[in-house]
Length: 428
Image (cartoon, rainbow, N blue to C red; front, top):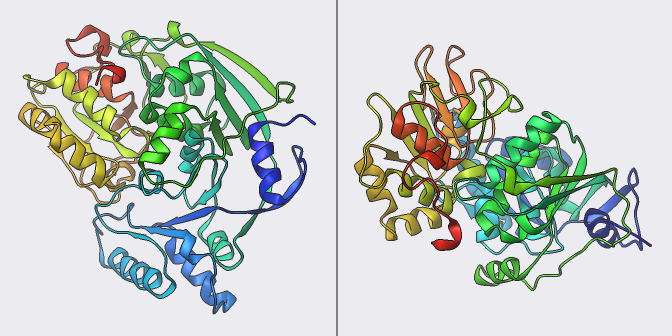
């Protein structure tokens, strides 16, 4: 019997020998997450169900990250309710400044290879970096998970993406994901599970692998899974996860599509204003003026992303008129960056550093509002019109290195053309 990674995990969690695409399964969940933007729905549904016991609540983390810090009274009241719910039901709680849900869950040792993890955010695909089936569900669905420990899913078709070669210095997983969006379009792999394999994946450090799985949400993927290797195992053990149960696809597994990409030929990419899939190489739009730069979010707010920016901006200043904000993905990353002196480098260059959270990415906390006709270059995952609070501004997307290089010059810049732009994670 031949199966993909996604099919094997879902079969095991459903107690079946094998499943195939299109099957509806009731699967055992290993860990769940609800963040503050969806928490009200989850709490209301628990009340509506009249559930007095929630056996799986202890395996459901509540994360205060989107409204962090709360920009209004309603958000503050939501946080109060979440803290009370977690206290009443014994749920893990990550409070303001602890970090973004997709970072704190693996950091907290809540998941491992072979797990099924669900969360109230489309970027729950991030957990696939650890060879887990991570997927997004609604807050109302989490209430049922807390009551039963199970979730129903339709088994997705799988797409195998083989990344050959190795990313060149100055080119990152973000550039690969943008290339994928340019090739397939937003939602182009809707409700399919992506398996990323190949020498380029093996060469990536964990931070970049998390970007690869995270950004698959913009492709519409149900999950984005990588194979587990020694790097995976060491990272999980270091963060207190339970013993990994690696899952590999069978050699004769059936895929809806097989894709081969020469990663070594890829240049830094950017997504142009208002569309995540309007992709060009950075060198094709050199000279495009920028006013604001954002590095962070669940896609590119990890330590290696901050290191990329520091390597480029060390001993230099942002271009005249350019503002820059750094939002680390978690408190752990914030502290690590402080210990390495990265924030000192970035602050001296003219950047500002925020507490860990999602608020700036989604425009909820209003910490980054561009003026009319201003241009933001961001390492976030989305650049929808008006996302940062101004429909008359533009948002472009790129890697942390591309964002930093652009902030240095004042216009979109291929990071390989500036000193420090070819920094490599393996040399950290």
